[in-house]
Length: 278
Image (cartoon, rainbow, N blue to C red; front, side, top):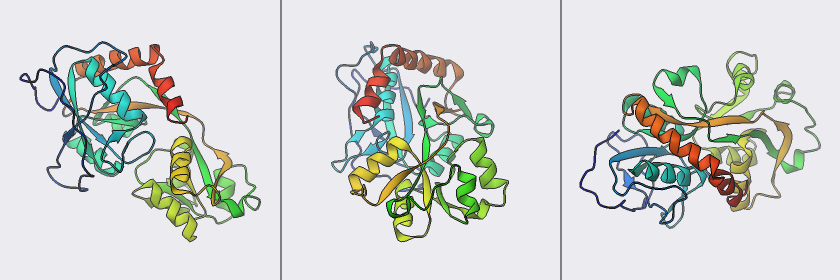
């Protein structure tokens, strides 16, 4: 873990004032506020510091207009870190940035990750702590025209699909993206909101997004009449906390897992997802 902090008597609360610049060599990190009434027992004094990388992915992870941290994954990480006696600090970047920082040991963990063989080379994984499901989103005006039953049928019509770079959408999608004749019809973006802008501008014909994330952005941006969810969805999949092998030991992952399991057993995570609109 990044640094032992023996001199702290209480978990320090701080919020990010703004987004950290992308791809900086030594990014600033900010300590995150802990809930004063956790659902699991906390250690009386912090014994370590954990640096969590996060991206803007509302309602799972985000910074509000007031600079306050929030989201399903943020609150889960706060509770789990407090349970094992750690100060949680945050570093924001794109998903691609986070994967690079995790490999280099510049951050300790990221939330909401899919387990893949390639990532196992540089990361430990927690127990699965929630599910996610991606669906195709299209322009509302074209909903009747696009009556396909699968992504492959959608692509076979020559249509373009927006994705986020380095996201894992499951084996079937990976094959379509990298091993089929339709590879050039997938358009990558650094941020999910860019896909919405591209859809409305006509640069793509649909995009893949987590259902809860897309609903949150569509509601916030006032796009409810312009963008709709297609019936095409990918199978639900489990997500994990991903830890840097360069910075975190397996014993420390085991401790974090015990905290996660407690949050699952008490119903905290299910209640949290419901509170955020899931």
